[in-house]
Length: 112
Length: 115
Image (tube, rainbow over all chains, first blue to last red; front, side, top):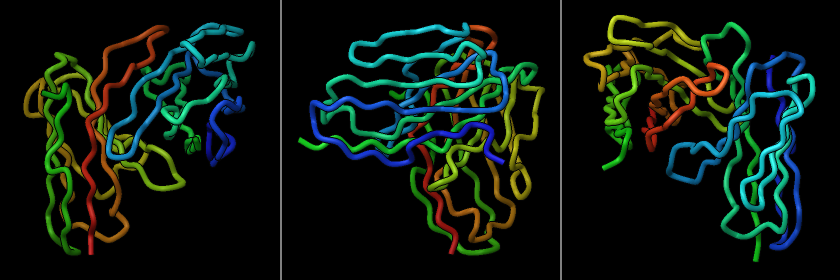
């Protein structure tokens, strides 16, 4: 059973388009993180959200944590070719010593 | 130099061989982790260590063992490699982040192929 369902699995768009990636669960998380991974490299942290309903912005990226702390979304405005990569959500369940459960990832391709 | 260094970066071996993947870090973090990444399955935790004397099994520890030689060093061993252990392996370190979540710094990965 996948505790964190991430969708879509693949996304191919043109430069300048907007997109949203979703991360959903039936479990409550004390916090949720988003990572970005490029080929040949390890994932790199983009953001951590900890409060239900929290919204964080990182330039053209907007991250939201659901009110019930069971889901999150990543919205990219006016995507650029440099946004291409694998986006991973990861959640820390209450009582898990902070250990993260990862979604399967969304592979984003932004074409010029 | 990278904060988290993994060696080797690539390794091809045969079924039944013993393999060790090594990880060293300069972050000064107490917590270290080994994950494996498979296409379509995401990242899964193999083992983790919160300090030199602390070793814990993760989600998929069968067939693997670890050694925490020092605060900065954490190695992963496959005593007798099998083909379904072919994967990309990541070492990571962390300090506690907001709400106690571990904020991970990953190495660049070790690609292991078992024939």
